[in-house]
Length: 97
Image 1: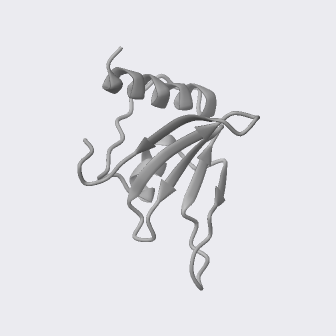
Image 2: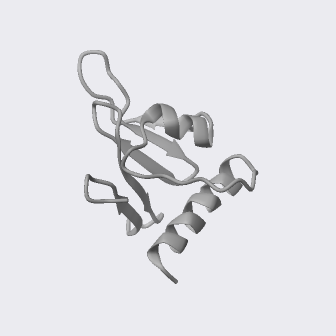
């Protein structure tokens, strides 16, 4: 299975668990907090607060964490198992589609 197909299935599984919908979503390094919320809906919880204004840098959907730069740009999708092992870690940077 190619990486792109795997990533699409992972994102679809987030949708199934979070919203129960079957729409396909594409995420990339150009996504922002706003575009992620538009695609997936409101996050289950927020974390990773930063700065004086306590801006959240992590949005949690089911067991997946979406990490953002202080500017709001998506930089990583992360998931770990209950025993702390990393099961998913997709990093977006300027060299990522």
